[in-house]
Length: 123
Image 1 (cartoon, helix red, strand yellow):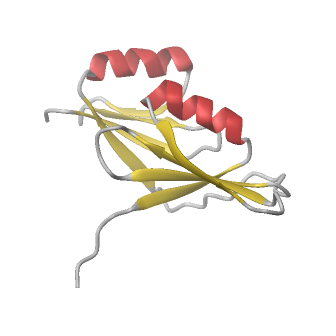
Image 2: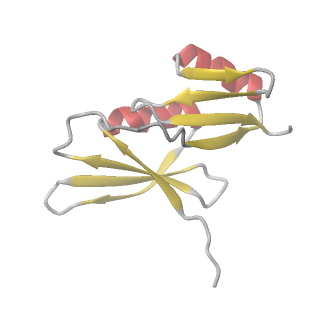
C-alpha cells in the first residue's frame, strides 16, 4: 500500500480575495474548480506549476463568521528561489506575521489568518 500527498485544504470567507492573495503572494494559479449544483459551496484547487501538490480553497455560501483556527500552529511551507525578493514582496503586501532571522525563515498570513512558512531554496 502506498500513499501520496494530493492536496491541503483551507476554508475561506472571501474566495476572490483569497485567490488574489495566493496569486500575488505565491504565484499560485487555479488548476480546477468544482461548484455545487445548488451554489452552496465552491472548491478551487491551486497549483504552483512545478509540483503536483495543490491547495484547495473551500468557500461556503452561508458562512459569515471567521473560522476558528485554534492553537494548532499548523501551516504550509513554500521554498523560494529568491528569498530576498520574496521577503520584499511580502513586506510590501504587509502580510509577514512572524520572522525568525536566526533560522532564516518567515511566515506570511493569508486573508483568513492561515500561516504560510517561506523557506529559502538552499539552506
